[in-house]
Image (cartoon, rainbow, N blue to C red; front, side, top):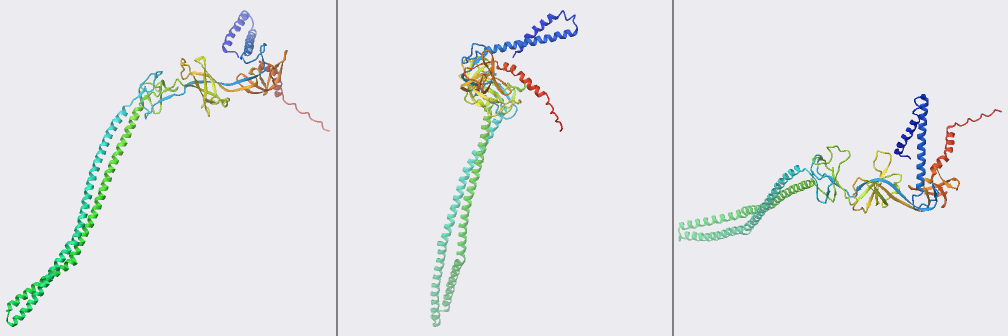
Length: 548
């Protein structure tokens, strides 16, 4: 293939020669002669291009004969001696350098208008813990101040609720103790009346009745005696009237005391028992009410404390969250590295990361790549992706340091194809660079060529790719017979960038030509013309048979 530069340089030479040789004739010759001159010039240019192609082809064939120390070539140019060899199979793709451990500095504040008020210059090397960016936090500071006031109020209410609980507990205990004392006293009053006062009153009345009855009987006896004496004239009737009056008085006293005893036993006793029993029952109820009220007030006070504590916890949680948000407004370096702004290709001037710009929540502000651990992200074509596996070794050559070859290892191969608008499917693979020289200043975004060792085939018959040509899905090579080259059909197997495995048709020691494509092009030209002519010529009509 001729490069554009060669074509550009070759055309003026031919054109100038043609113009010089025919300049005096162009004035006298007719228009048809000038057209003929242009055709001759065009043919000369084509001949020059063909000659250059021939020179480049022969040169490449001669150079290819010396391409490897392991390749055995004859002293004759353009041939290769077949032998058993070990072939390394590689996949060569290009990729972009990136950090293996890239940390993203991201806006964690809510909203779409978070202003950057401080930002270190891009390319600055920072150490872990150093300030990289500062976001505006005036509103957050105001919210924190308001939340502290609310927290203090909630803490005051909680302390007040605890004091009210202590007061209520004391009051409840006092009310319960009073009710218990009243219950005990009512019980004692009931017992005192039933077993004391009632018995005493009853006994006293019974004593009075007994004494009055005795006095009444004695007065009756005295009256009867006086009546006898009055009849005999020994006593006066006045004395008899006195005894009768005394008899009536004692009888009245006895009847009165009997009536009192009956009232005591039938009415007063029952009433007093009912009254004292009711007081005892009411004292029990009062004690229950006192305990229930004390418990209810206690629970009410405890609920007030719990509510106040929850309010305090809520304000503390919100204050902690606000402090966390405030801390997120300060972006520190999580690791050592060189700061790179997280600008995207589609960002306009107003969207680019800078001091004074506004960023939204979860938007990246900067990247902090780990320059000590670098890798190459490679796009592997779908035709060879199944040959690339994690763990395979690779050779890496950066365009910026083309004279240095680095060692690497495949660490990841994607299962799904990368998104693309093209119909071509490529898969991402990561190749980690091992043992980076300390004096090599690698930077993310550099372009690299990666050669991945995907296999090694030992003791196989393999020939250079230039020694094989193909025609109608059949592979051929040209065997050197000394004075001529014989075409031989072969069966091929695995193929690398440089060699093709030959399964059948060649033996070690055979000598073959390295320009099989050129030979095949000339060799099969006649056959292709014959096939083309057969396809273009319509089939002959069948002859009509003669009727008998």
